[in-house]
Amino acid sequence: MKKLKSNLSQLIEENKEEIIRNRREMDKIEEKIDKKYTSKKEHA
Image 1 (cartoon, one colour):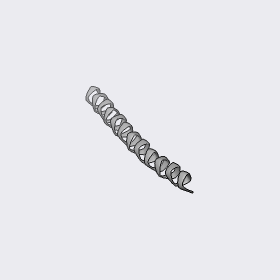
Image 2 (tube, rainbow, N blue to C red):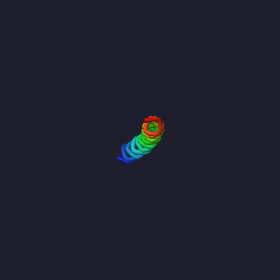
Image 3 (tube, rainbow, N blue to C red):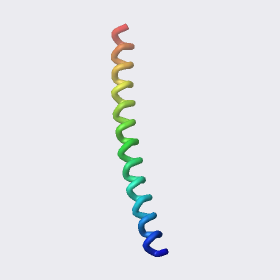
Image 4 (cartoon, rainbow, N blue to C red):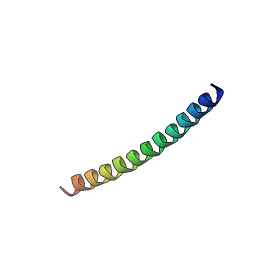
């Protein structure tokens, strides 16, 4: 049971890190979209 628990907590930890990475990627993409949108708006 203890091994199962440690495996589970390790999985959760890895998942957390992946979620954080994904969120950073999303933020970068949103930033790019924002920049494109604002630059288009200024040229319009």
